[in-house]
Image 1 (tube, rainbow, N blue to C red):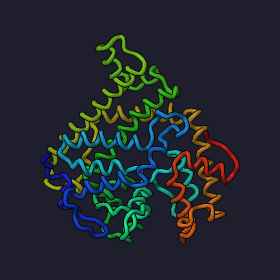
Image 2: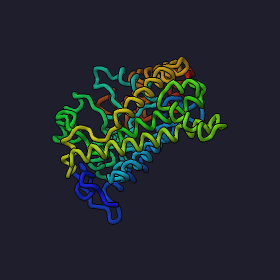
Image 3: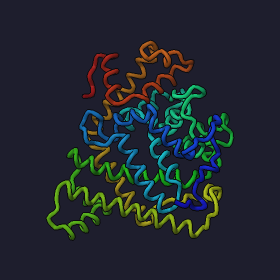
Image 4: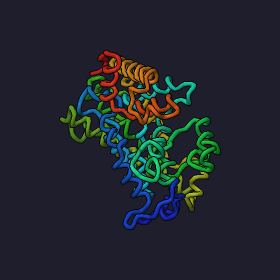
Length: 376
């Protein structure tokens, strides 16, 4: 497929931190994607939670299935906009590599533990995974990904961390957080596809869990309009088939809205290069009406699913597991593998070790160290 002028061309990549000879049969972004898929951190995502903890059911989303769904959605939009699908896929598959066990509960607990020690940001940890923590090559740490993939992985970054990264990598992946420029259009697209994917699959998982109902979801305009359209066409449809069809239509509507809205923005501005895209305002976007509907859906999920008493109870237990693991390892570094225990920054080593755990390994380690069984 021909790339648009404003798409990232692998032949014009800003390169890797450690120079390597090009691959004979793959572009630089294809090579990034393949390295991510074969990484240890990527395999661990299958046992890292989204909303529901890993032991609560076999059919709930995990970080791995979420990452695959983000990649699928983003590639579909990227193809229509003539963006680089290989770069999109690499960013999407890697964007959650730094997530802790137990989802946002684990991340928040680890950030609290690391206050005064540099804090913890999962996007920054994802970059740390691909830059430092993966150990697969003889000549360098990490996966040595291209600038463009690394830039897309670092979706958010505090100013303090951006300044620290900038000091070691002038003009690098953190620069845009200081000068307020934008990442590539491929990275912008992955950010929005992430939001679309988790809203949709959290509806599915929420209904499957019994915590939210189809009746409740009809309070949400985006869901209700597609539910009504589905039932006009298939009057007898109900249960899971109805839910799946409504979610499918919601996803399609959002995807086509992003394509149409972004095309309109690109046509209005008349971009001629990747440099122009980075200097412009964010360009990959919903239209105004869809933005309002998406925000309403997010509010509904926050109030009715993420703050549901059962979810809050489990996430409270998960936070305790992470906090007590951190305290136990910091008090006795020998409880960690020797390569972590030997690192000079003990607190960061503990955070790295815990962040890399799956849900079930973290629960087992907590039980081993404390004698308490808090999670399944």
